[in-house]
Structure formats: C-alpha cells, structure tokens
Length: 594
Image (cartoon, rainbow, N blue to C red):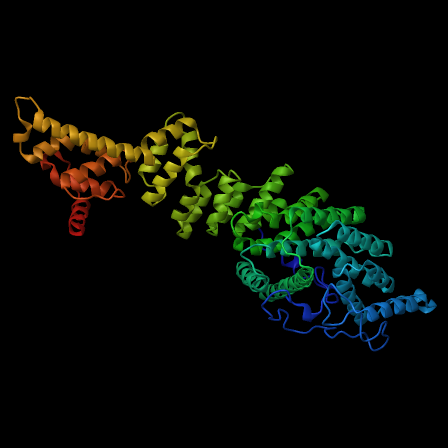
C-alpha cells in the first residue's frame, strides 16, 4: 500500500519561514488581477499587507518604487530616478556597509519592490535594489528571480534573469534548496493553469477540494491534517498570486499567457543555469524533495486536465523540469508514480511513465494498477494497461469485485485480458472463446466492441492468429457476413420448396417440420456454442432466421437468449431441448413489444 501523504512535507515544525512561499514578495492587490474574476483569493491580511516600510528605520520614501496603480510595463520616471539616488546614498554610508541588516518589515517591502522590478525586466533598478539587501533578503530575491523564469518569453529576458541570479548569488545568497523547492511547486502550478479546462480563478477552489478528498483518506492526526490543508492552501494562493502578476504583465505587453515550445526551451535553459550555479549545494535529497514539490500540485490537478494534456505544450516545461531533477538525483519517481495512480492523476501518470522510460527507471505499473483499481480510477487504469503495459490483472479484479465496480474495471482491462488469454493458451484460443461467450465485460455491446477493436487493430502486440480468429468470428464484419449467409440460406430453402424435384414435396409438409428442416441445424449449433453471447457470425445467422420464422422485424442488437426463444417457438417441441422458463418469458415479452 502506498504510504499516506507525508504531512511532514506540508507542515514543518520549528521553521521560521515557509519553504515554498514567503510573505514579502506579493501584494494582496495583485491577486488574480489578470482574470475577470476579481475575488480576493487571500481573505486574511498578513503582516506587511500595507505598502509602507518599517517606522523605525525606513530605507526609502513612503511613496515607494512603483505606484500601486502603475502597470508592469511602465514606471514613474521621478520615482525611479529618486529611488536610484536614494539607493546610492544609503549604500554609500559607512554604517550601512558595516551593519547591512534589515528589519522584518523592510525585508517584506524590499522583496515586493524587487518582485515588481523583475516583472518589468528593469535590470538596472533590480541590481540597485540587490545592493540594499541583507543576507536573508538576498535569499528572498534569489527565490523571486528564479520564480520569474517560468514566464520568460525572449532571449533578452533570459539574459536579464540569469544575470540577476548570478549577481544575487555572488552577493551572498545561498538558500538553493528553498529556491529549488519553491520554483518546482510554482512551475507545476503554471503548467496546470495552462490547461484549457482550468481557469486561474477556480484553481484554488479545485485544489482545495482535491486536497480535502485526499486528506480524508489519510489516517493521520486531525489537527495535523488541518494544518497541512491550510499550508497547501497558502502555497497555492501564493503561486496563483505570482502567476496573476506575471500574467497581467504579459497582457499589458500584448502577449498571450500560454507558452510556445521556444519559450519553454528558454525557461528550461534558465532553470539549468540555476542548477549549474547551485552546483554541489543541492544534494540528492534536495532534488528528491523538489521532485515531490513539482508532482504534488499535478497530483491534485491532473484529473481535471483535458485528455492528452501530458503530450501538449502546456506540459513540456514540467516534463523538462522533472527530467532535470531526476538527472540531479531525485529517486522518488516510483513513489510519486504510485501516488498519482492512486489518486487518478492520469496525465501525471503519463508524464512519469515517459520520464521513467527515458531515464531507464523502474516503476511498478502492476502495483500502480492495483491502487488505481482499488480507488476505481478507470481512466488511470486504461493508461497503465495501454501505455504502461501492466499485466497483473488478478489483484485489480479482486479489488473491483470487493468494491462493486467489476464491470468498469473489466472494461478498462478488457483488451489486455483477451491478449493475455490468447498468449497463455498454448496455441489454443479456447480461453478467448470462453471469455467472449461469457460476456466477460458484463455488457454485450461492450464485449463485442472489444473483440471488433482487436480484430481491426494494427497493434503488433496482438497476435496475428488471435486477430484473424476475432475477425472471422467476433467482428462486426463477421456479423454482417452471418446476416448475408442467413439471407442466402433462406433463398435456397425457398427454391427447394418451390422448384425441388424430390418425391417428397417439402411444401406439402406441416410448417413446423419445414422450419425444422430449414433451421434445426442452426439451432443446435447455437446450443452447442453455449454461453451468454454467440460469435458474431453465428448471431448474424440467428438474427436473420428469427426474422424469417417470425415474420417480424428483429433488432440487430438482439442477443442469443431472445433469438433462441423466437426460434424455439416455431420449431416442433420434440426436436428441442425443453425450453427454459426464461426463454418462454423472453418470448412473451418480445411478442408484447412487437
């Protein structure tokens, strides 16, 4: 069983600052401002929610760097010039050079100003703000600069951001672990928000709902679960605020918010530069935790994505990010893979399968199939079977039986079950026949559809003899052939009756005997076939026979029991096995309907 969600990753004790988000860089007025929904995601005001500096020792003027209502693409010239002058004056003082320590409120405000400057790509002003930073603020700035890489669109922006990161590190920033974890979480949210089925304004609510569902299945302490939920809610709100700021900046510049392949390559190049700068400061454990931080939002979001999202441009960035984290030493791909399977995050499962294949990593697809079946994640099961080549069906089927969802699970596994039956029967296809005749999917139309799909498949994993057998007996083409055969048979019988030269004139025999001569062999062949379903070729003949003997229209979707009851009604009883009560009831109901 997959271990319950590691709440320790979400609630860290004795930690002064949150690993993923810090309160200093984003103003509440920036929340989701790029969307039409103006709801304030963060309902509570935290410290530093007003844009003023510490009353004890303000570094800059109260007017600040950029006015509240100023867009990302423009600045007040006077304010910018005055700030540059004040920065120069402050940093030239001997006392500042000796102490260079900011109050908490100063750090919060300086971080916010730096966020806005980075968003506007003003490298000169950003570098001047870096000079004001103490060691802790430098680490805040490193996170802010790194977070902005997921919104790069040009080579010039790439050079500006990587240049700022290098300068910040050169000036003393060293919290590479925090920066890596934070930006991995953000990158995941950015990719999620580019799904066509996800709106930025609804994302917090969707994640909160998914998280609540996930926590309900954990057996941890209720207080710890509540703290974890609040923590993840805060992380998500922070990420969406950040996305909102950058999205508004993109819109002000006339750019669209979804990235192109070229832009994604620039973003991944910037992240690779950060990893090169961090070097040995990031350990395998750091890469593992960053991988987990990137997967976690997708575990919650992925079930809401449109099918095929994992192979689209929106997912390219997160695929590249996860790939680099694996190269750096992340060793929890299988753990995240199992978690994604358990919670039905099909698109994330798809991504992790691809990453495992590219990096020659082992992931336990059979165990993942067991988890997906246990929680009735049918779409994920289909992905694991079709793309992950899962082949251990007994466990999933037993779990499905326990949970009362056998039919859905069988439908998801049907093709692979038939393939396995064909492969393990030592040259005989009796196992395949037994499954099909037993209507193993639990729905005749679905069972026939599976057989027809395999008959028409060009998949090399389907054995040629199995494909040929299904095409001849169980395909839609076989049913059509059966109908034609039945029609030809009827024509031949009529010719014999009317033109036959036999001394015994068949046309003079009682009608039940004529029916027996015409259709008793077919009736006995159907009895011999047995089972709930007949091969399509045989069923086609039976449909035509039932139509001819009854003189009424018969649906092509009619199944063996109904068709056999019609035939039994018109054949002499001494030729038949005793008709069942079910057959009589079926015939009676059919007569009433027609």
